[in-house]
Length: 509
Ligand code: NOJ
Image (cartoon, rainbow, N blue to C red; front, side, top):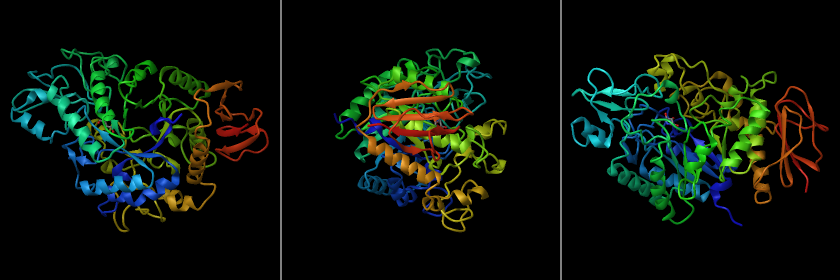
């Protein structure tokens, strides 16, 4: 049976500011992405997800949208967007765009009007006096309320330049339905929904203990039941368009059952499953995540890195040399993830094995988390450093020569640039290409379910019909289970042993 494209797609996240700069201002842009589309087709992904490129004062890298229907001049024009979509489609790549419904920018015309006293019911304004209306803290640290000159306070779960919408107001619903149509009419294949578990806040906005202010299945701030009605409305719009248009929710939660609520048949098609990305390097932890996910959701997704978290090569153990395990583990985790049923989301640069950049100078950092925490928290700039494409020094082909990228690139990236890796069969880029090719070749021939095979405690062996995936998270080599041949290894597989920090795909017809 034909399954919809998104069901087992490999989607590549493009953090637009940091992918490729065609205009020469040091910031990535839509024409830069378009020029590099052949690289992505060659890599073997099925779709790209573009982070916000809308008009924005960039208080949060574009997740503060001032106009949902236009491209920020920093990134190009609507014509550039149309050309990018057309070219992506020509190359067989689908395009997913980000939609940010929890909050707008404080520069949005609705919020500007609200500050003048018009239409405040579109946002979360409350009386407070000298103190904020409740004890809620911003996810980016500091209070979640800012006082306006006339004495009222407005809620912002993120930066103060990101006022939260009031989703109890039907006007907000109508506006977003229209925004969806605007981009669907421009032929996008889907949406990634920012903070999809936000939107509604408990009536009365009660004071909430700090532990319940974190992302959770049940909290006065996140995952309110009313939010599901929004996605039922959105699903109707998506279904009214030809082609298989889809939506994936950014749902941070502590429960797989809660995640499943967002992907009921009349709601979103997918939600991000962040459990693996939050897990340590551990076979039992990975097995539990796989079981919990497959038990709870019918359209699973897997993700190891994105623009909000420390890159997984670094999470799994610093560094890129043979004596540090991060890169080996990252490659092994990729093979395990790509062997599972469902779709996989990759983050730009992981195919080059890029580590987190930890030593960015304070004056270069731009993440509001760094700024709002007064430097206590490093923020997310370290995973957003512009990609190295070619050459031995900054800007590594990201920008035209002589231009300084918006974040400095490390000198050690000289050996990691894409051009160099493309010519090296042992590189991480070549490994990603090979793994994605192997996955494509197996498409349609694998079981939907995972069958666990007996394995040592620190390893996982699972099969899906003819494919068996093995991963060794322990410190001793393990014996491979019986198989016909090795399809691919995250490192060379010699004899019948799987070395520590290694994964492989075994084939038995
Ligand atoms: C999630 C996005 O991925 C992140 O980058 C952003 O800061 C917050 N949502 C707020 O929009």
